[in-house]
Image (cartoon, rainbow, N blue to C red; front, side, top):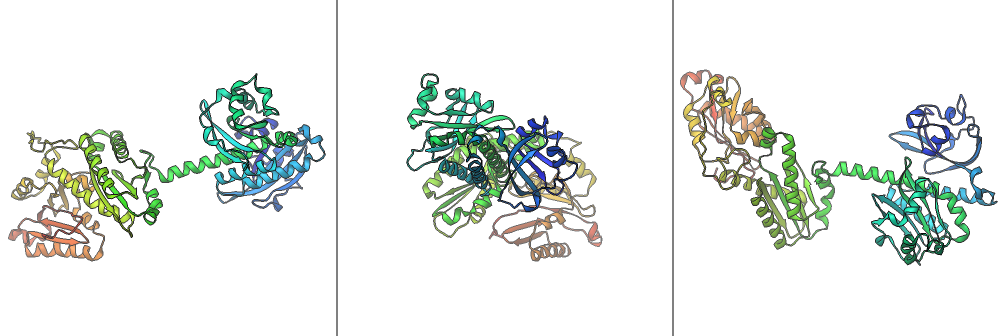
Length: 582
């Protein structure tokens, strides 16, 4: 029987099923929050013999006690642990009066010693995987076994997930995977009743259980003992030993259930850590690794002789979200991930942004890397959705994943510009070699653009010149300075995440994208001087980014009302590398 209580308040927080049944509780809610001394011993105040003050983490205090509520003698093991900065008492009690083997004079001391050893192994390592291995090793050496193992159930099969072997015994874990439980159905029936399987002589089951005999005989099993692993009363696996010391069969049988409690505790910790790891390092939508995992895996670079990186960006995701809803956008993201994952055939695919994926290839030869790039381009060409692809390969140290991603990112942006140039006339994400098709657009007097033109001052000639330019890698925007409002082109709206084509305060928003204080000041100085000097072209390059804008000429009257003037900002092109032509 096991319970856990808060050491500051004495409130019960957990009882295992065996203790709940003994005290008549059907669920956890019926006892949680009640005082441990009241529920467990019927007292109105804390026990005078309480051991809280002597308990230490990773150490177990052993004593015996006759419980006044159940009127039975128990062997008790106490310890303390911390969780979420709170201190908890854990107590494990064994009904020694009910054990048949307690009639053996040395049973009490021997069983206490073994349980104490198991407890120490269970809490001796922060890793539940390591602690499970230590428990198996301890039990195997204590009972002189050939093998000690844990099987976990998975539907209609069982898998040998953990194993310890004596040096003289052959490991069996690899071949004992996906074992049909029909072979040991009679074991399962006993385990579901919380009973043990005891085979003192394998030949005794040869006729009655031939399937089990056929599995055990090749493993050179002569005798075994196995007990259930239960989680909230549900059978999830079993713990067993092969060929223990014949003289210790009775002793190990009395302890198997208690060992099962230690094992299920560690399995739960293992599963919790795996779940937390999945949440921390995997993207829940696609199952790909996330940005946290990329940073964690950055040690790739220290161990590799060569490396390749492919950077992918889903084209038109925002349009899909806006026009078809986020469910459709999620479907596009999952489709794109599967295409990337299947074509590149690498486990190291990371979702680094809403529409961005990075694939890393450690220790890949250059020719093999270019083949993967080519295969991905071919798959994207066949797909109905476009993905911009960038890449970088390095054949000598030193190099870093982040630096290679930056190189691949620049190639990807060029691929995206080429795509937009070839498909400039098509709306949304539609494409496929129809760039020369010119759609006939019906006039809509109630459109957002039409209303904007009729409520703001603008230069029609400048608008016409902007719209007529055959340069789809540029971003066009114009507006009314007096109202501090601007109209931006569709591609600029989508690429920079504006909610609408109409953007109030665009110049301020644009300035915020300049991370350097020095170049941000230059940006404002250039704008101010351009207006004063009536310059129509404004150039500013900063840290590899190029900003360009073009204003309308000001009349004398407009010059006298400088901050009530209208201007058009045209062809603001952002390049990842400095454009030498400018």
